[in-house]
Amino acid sequence: MDFPIKTGAPARQKTACAVVPVFTGKAFTGPVRDIDAACGGLLRELVRSGDAATELGRCMMVPRLPRASAARALLVGCGKPGDFTAKRYKHAAAAAAQALKLAGVTEAISYLPAVAPRDLDPYHAARLLVETTTGVCYEFAELKSKPGAKRKKLARLGIGGIDKHSLDDIRTGIKHGRAISVGTNLAKDLGNRPPNVCTPTHLAEAARTIAKQYAKIKVEVLNEREMKRLKMGALLSVTQGATEPARLIVIHYQGANARQAPVALCGKGVTFDTGGISLKPPPKMDEMKFDMCGAAAVIGTMAALGEVQPAINVVAIVPACENMPSGEATRPGDIVTTMSGQTVEILNTDAEGRLILCDAMTYAKRFKPRYLLDVATLTGACVVAVGNVYTGLFSNDDELADALLAAGRRSLDFAWRLPADEEYGESLKSNFADFANAGSREGGASVAANYLSRFVEDTPWAHLDIAGVAWKANADKGATGRAVPLLTDFLLNL
Image 1 (cartoon, rainbow, N blue to C red):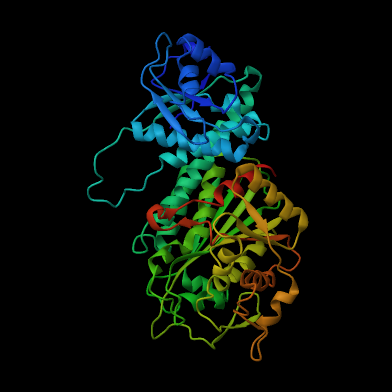
Image 2: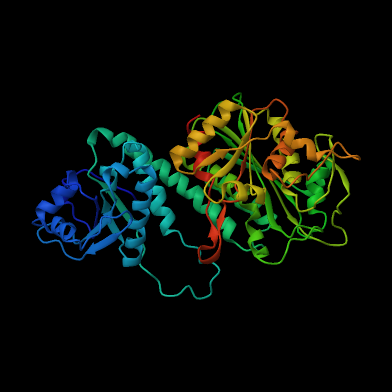
């Protein structure tokens, strides 16, 4: 989708549809006033009469604008001016994109950035419009034999009514918004593919594909024999019962001098999680194809970096495997030795994400990273704690945590910091190994984070538990691509 900048007078801009923001109790200003004046006050009259609602997210298509260059207008309610925030701006942009999509509009100009709230500068207003519109227009139909009636798609959304002094910021916002959208859509595609398609090998091929697209990205893939040589006993214990071979995917993005310490990203890639011998209950087990959304977010972030090409070094480590029950599967009570040399008593084979991540994190430390971040659909306890609104954030470094929280606020991909203090590790004590892989249900997300913290030592580290935000269920079932906007924003701001 293209997002050209339109600097001419709004009333003289030719377009199939002008997206016009309207507020409750506020007189028209700027581009909205210009378009309304050209069509003889028609838009103002529609609002005054109540035919066009101004409540947030309410849309009305005006099929004809007399004497204006736009063929028609989409009036988008933005609510009360004093209540209009970045979140509400995104809501209005999403409603407009949905209305354009349903109407089959292929080209339009949006004047929403011209009324962006105070907490959105021109760069972020443009970036958020691009990300939101692209996200609404995303569809996953690659595996349907009969996709249905082909609907016309929005191919071009101009950004109009802008301050010419902000052109450079807006251009950058569009560029970054498109890059984040590329990464987010890739993460959605990987998450939405069924587990008989999106296997560990498929994730490795997806990484190789982006390496072919972007010169600054290189990929290496380790097989189980190589993982055994590295003594990754925790990771291999999870894949022990599966016939699908595990893969350790290593993606390098080099945008700076090789001497600059990289940021390391580790993404949980369990392409299907039955729970192993500690078998999950059948209802909604199909959603366990989304247990690789941490890996998808990390791979998507690397694609976004390939698009933007910032001056930074990043290495992504993706442990990819299945967790299946079989005669060869790991049993509760088994003890494994991790790559770090620490031993773990496996009390619950469904606490497998932390087992594959701990070896991946130990491997990541060989690159002497500036920061070490892991992203995982790790615990149901995090869903209980913060629902499907926030990513759970745990960290051993306040400065890193603050930077990630700020990135979440800027990108509207929000995170909330939770504790991982040593007290949460009390229930991980084991009589037979250094510690166990599962402990108390109370504070379960923090217990899991405490487990991971044992593998980072002094490295500044953050754990992002995306279990509640990585996918939607029921009628809206599908991957969200979340953590890509947050991670990309964080990396760009380094």
